[in-house]
Length: 277
Length: 302
Image 1 (cartoon, each protein chain N blue to C red):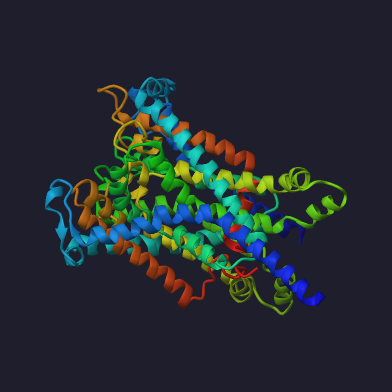
Image 2 (image 1 turned 90 degrees about the vertical axis):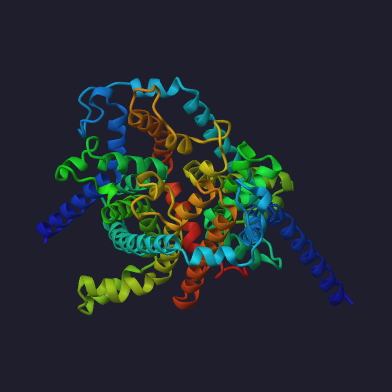
């Protein structure tokens, strides 16, 4: 029995290793590419023979990349803040208040969660050109916050349903003002949910490619994923692969760090919205 | 009458609650309507026009002409077939792999955190980055995976191998999401029920098929619905891996090309509207045929 148990454990350990390797090896490969020196870039080795930081130095010297990085961070942050703020208001109403039209709101956000973005690209392209929003930050922030609102509303309302709201009443009975009850009791309970939602929304905005290539035409609002697709290499004679790999690593590492730090919350957030509704 | 006064007070409270509810939801609803409902209406309008961006003066109403043009063109049907193929194969593979992954995460004790973290990495990675990684891996002369193939093979330049690689990239990126949704469903299966089935002599596979799966059905359906709709709009991976060449373009690629390569806003909008209808049809089929509960609808009245 004990031996069977041990074999069982070994089996799961092997499964674990397979899973981890499966998840990480494309990441390792792009990292390896980014550290390869131009002469060995095409050798097809899984581990670089000659390590170099040149690819990173190269991309940070071009405005093409640095500007895109600023755009990516700024646009994703602003869209996240707005989507989470609007989402918090709506989710509070969905979780706590009785009002007609709630089902309609849920239905509408579900519809948008399923919406094919390509269907919006052609009309938005035309509308944004007419309004002068084409190739600007707001031109990307608007679709990003809209498409992440359903995610924010679902995740937040699932979190808000778990909060013991009676504590608010208890605090008031104990003599707290409504503002104090909110600040000292409710806000600390709600903060983890809001923070988790913000991470999910940020990852969503950070990931977008279709809007980023369709609604921009110059460096002024192009984000990193779109800029990478147009990379030609930091000099005319250099292969773009090294630059692309380095740029890819720059936008990947922060997300991986985030995921490592907050994995428990991200899992809770991802599943609460979809399963508990 | 005290009773009537109480009722009036209550309804005043309810009215206030109702107003607050509407007020809190209004900004979100306005944004969603302005950025999706209005443009999709505008897309329908554009799709009824002949509208070539190179000749904006020659725009005119052509009725359903654009739809006739799209639906009678082999490009649309090829893209439609490709998209359907990618969707069906990748969602099936993801369901099987995701279930296996969920089992590993559910049952394993040692290293549970490591596995969960590792699994989140593909979710967090930008799709374009992952697609570039696969592209370089399979490009002859650069990639370690291409090096494993016989010389002269370039899988990304042939239709079926390229489709296989697009599916591989999609499966790698999205299986973790599927697995996490299924894991949440697995957690809802009571341990006692499984033990009872075991006492009754059910084997591992029987327990899985007869007990676990039926109890997980809602979670499975939601995961399938989300992933099917997501797979149907596949764009990023195809764009980076093949740019839609060699008969690998999805419907989203077709829409994009009509707009930005052919600069034909009329035809592009017709494609957009058709994709929208396909997605609506898939969602409807899931909800009606399989009884997938739309997330939130169960508790919508709360």
